Image 1 (cartoon, rainbow, N blue to C red):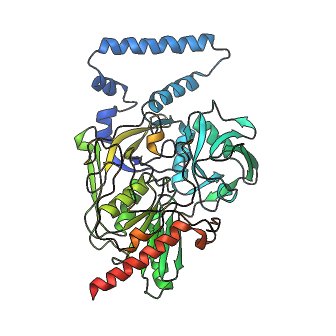
Image 2 (cartoon, rainbow, N blue to C red):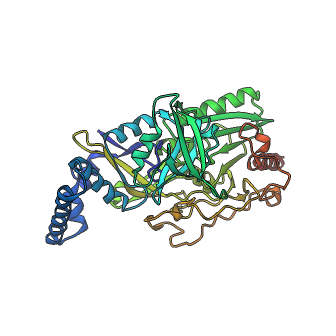
Image 3 (cartoon, rainbow, N blue to C red):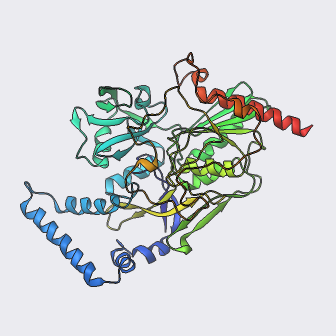
Length: 469
């Protein structure tokens, strides 16, 4: 049996799972069941102290059972204890009961019921990572960074993330009202919408003149196949005459590791894609591109990223940037450089999501807490980003340290030096002019970052033609 891992953004729902080290290896480190004994054996040599701490836990457990204001099921107490132990480690480790684990497996396949929101928990509230394209949440105008304060008028404080997500799910056509706090808006906003069966179209594409545009909204089991189909479709529509591509990973929170590797290989012919380093050297791994993998035949490529680009998105961006295969345009990415292993628990008791490794770009960079800096900085609006809401890994509590990479200990991320960019790259404005139209996702001409990316692809294509002559 193979266990499965995913590159997950906090406790983000709609994230993914993918192949991991063999069960035997994990059993060696975590134990054949819950892994308590081996974990304690490695954590401390003072078994007496360990037993005293376990006795303390038992005392608290019995006191809550006996004296809490109302009876609480033992399972609820134990599950809360497990979740507390894991969430206290870092923002991305957590416990999933049987239902949550089943929901995650369903979501990974790309279909589920609800609103179409990717969310995590922050300071007692529910934070929107990103609305999924063409879902009730996206059509209602929910934005990345919004804080959900209440559901149907009831505060989310005190709810676990699982409970909040369960409340947001429901039968199709049933109504729900979200109360949200948005950066720059003084009063809370109430947004009502109807639930739908969410069929995630993770890949969208279009021809922008003679440039192919491909957007990937998350890394699910359909991502690589969707990218391949999109490239083939664009090449057919253009009669084989495509000047270059824009690959949009903005607000893509990540997902499956194997899909990140496969999608990277869709644009690469050689070299390392990503490596992971675990606590135990035997569990460290490396993935390389396969020869002949680039479906675009080396065409100029610009990748769009922003603060919502996380995890698997950063693996792809980092691989393409380090290889000089693509030019990254936009704003600094989220900065999640850790890998979570999803470990099913015996007896239909759900699973734990445990941070087990850091990942590194081909040049050895760890982006943990730093993110990936684009080669060309371009913002989506004239307004400077506010500092009220956490928008990157470094803003979260209990994050793991950045270590082991070529940039270990760096307080500020720095992009690799490049001397292969066209002169236009320095002249692109960082922010839209005052008369720039209001952004409308259905009108590419209003997307300032996309328009600058199209200009850059044209410049890259011209530079490539000049060097070939």
